[in-house]
Image 1 (cartoon, helix red, strand yellow):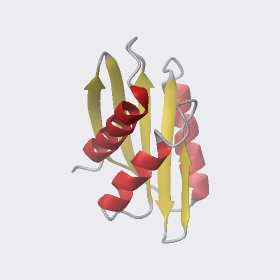
Image 2 (tube, rainbow, N blue to C red):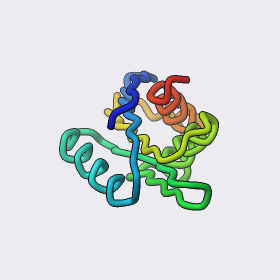
Image 3 (cartoon, rainbow, N blue to C red):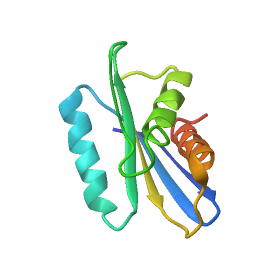
Image 4 (cartoon, one colour):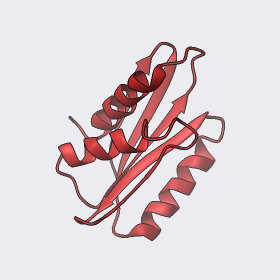
Length: 116
């Protein structure tokens, strides 16, 4: 179930974000596939999810390692959310953001979807 969405823009790139409640990893995989299909024209479809204290996954989907999935997971943890998936879809705007810029963009997009 969709619980929130957001939009973050930086140097021409658009980051669309979606937070979804999930009950298990199968729910997460199904929703991720849905977003990848719906936004097939996007450059990156990155995500993180948390199910309980010890089960979490992240995916940078072609972005430099640690610049997308981990900032999304940190936003989830900062919001003290559980059983949640956050997907951030990036449409590249032509200007490289650098690793720091990417981390900020993915974190802020995730926070928007989480209502922070």
